Image 1 (tube, rainbow, N blue to C red):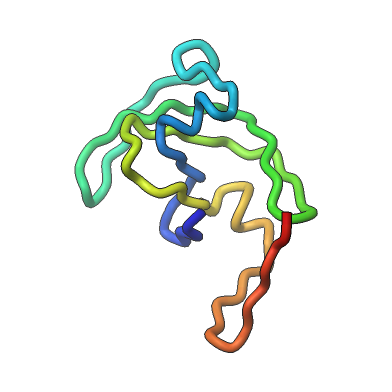
Image 2: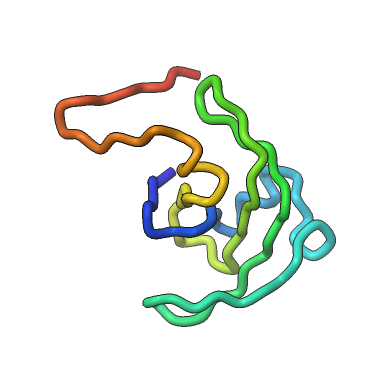
Length: 96
């Protein structure tokens, strides 16, 4: 995922909903968002359990209509819950 400090919410491309077993039409609310690139339909899942290394969070999660966007880690209830340091001298790796 790309850590996107400018993104309010965590957003994934549409195809990832299938991989996660989420039915966009039944499980999500549809709304429209507008940004620098124009308007976009978003399928919004109010609560999704996500895991980053050893940490788990319940976050709101959006799926964009398109597949060609990278997964974006947003601030709300996810990135903002971690102490985040951007430094060229420090790297942390998570093994699976």
